[in-house]
Amino acid sequence: MASVVKRKRYANRQADYADEYAIAYQREDDGTFTIWAEERPDDPYRDPDEAHVALDGEKVCVAPGREPRSLERAEAIAHTWMLGFSVYIRSGRFPRGTRRVDL
Image (cartoon, rainbow, N blue to C red):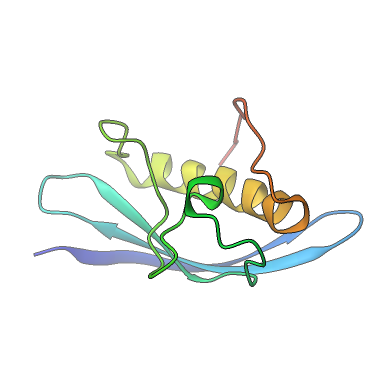
């Protein structure tokens, strides 16, 4: 049975804004982690392909086969998603490309 192993509140503070998030990390039976955005800013565009989060829930989308197998990797993905989601809700576009996250 899957279980939440960590819940954490985050603030994405940038020069022009600050967004609050609450993220839960759940360990699945297969050893991977799912990321749940339990609290996030309102999404004015409601485009699941661009937002990378299920609109009818809270699950952050991760490409099939790329699911994190460690909590540290799940946290890095969550940080990247939060940064991108904050840009998306202001522009309608999720930034592309890779990011480096130090935890």
